[in-house]
Length: 157
Image (cartoon, rainbow, N blue to C red; front, side, top):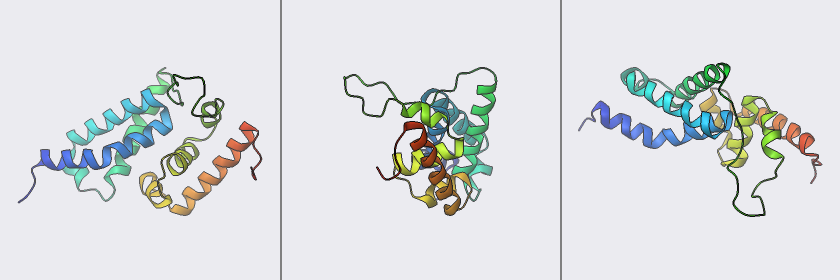
C-alpha cells in the first residue's frame, strides 16, 4: 500500500527530524537551532514532493535550516551556543566549554559535538554536511586542537 504524502512526511520527520535538530542546535545553540529546525521542516512540508525525491533530504534540510539561522542571526537575533543551566552545584560540563565551542567554525563545532557529544559516526556527519568522512575527521581534529588550547588542556590529558 502506497503512503500518502502526509504519512511519508510524518515518517520522515520522526526518523530524520531529531538528527537535523541536533545538528542545527550544535551550530546555533538551543533557541535559534530549534527555530531553524522548525523553519526547515516547514519548508520540507511546503515542498515535500520535491524534497522527498532528493538523494539526501536530511542534508538539504540541514542547509535550509542553517541558511535560515544565518539570515536570522544577521538580522540581530542573538546566537548562543551553550548548554542548559544545571540546577545543582556541580556543573555537568566544563563551565568554559560553551565559550570555547563558540570559538570554533560552525563545521568544526558541528563535527565535534555530533561525533563526541552525540556519538554520530563520521559517515553520518559527512552525509548531513555533504562532505566525506575524512573531511569530517579533519574538522573534528582541528576543532579538538582549538578546544584544548582554549581550555588549557594538554593533548595527552
